[in-house]
Length: 171
Image 1 (cartoon, rainbow, N blue to C red):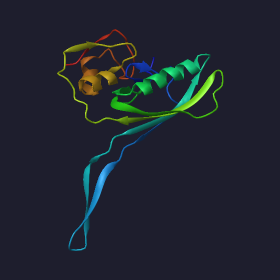
Image 2: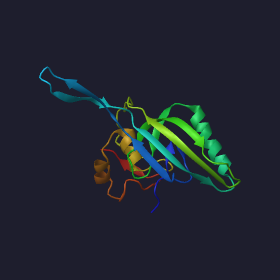
Image 3: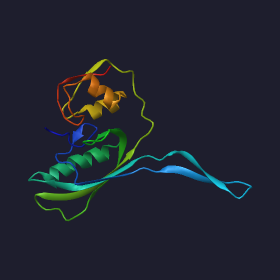
Image 4: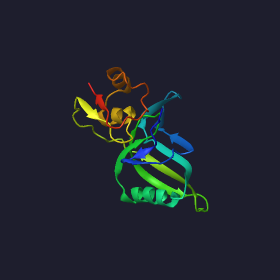
């Protein structure tokens, strides 16, 4: 079984990051009352922050980093897909080399920030998986629950498997 590698705006990482962390917080206000008590009021959540670190390795590791750096410099929001997780619409916030680069090894870290105002277009009935896409990507892209996609497409055993060129039923 081949798991999907991390992707942003159609660019795939050759190897998934070694570490990932997710930070999601809420806006919370504490309100006092004239009777000496207080209550908590939730005012929604802040944008998810996704941090990771890993290594690019091989004779072309510097070219791999240059590809990520071009993606970072290009700016703009896009779909961030990470194996075993639901895709998110995000902005590439930072990219950093964390150790002295070697000819065949480059250590790096990155940060993505969720963009919460993504609107989905009208859904088509089917779609075709592009290179490296999995059901999680389709779930996010078309706003269809992953459980529904798995039920409609029983040939998929796991939502993070890639099947380029395969037709997926959406409804």
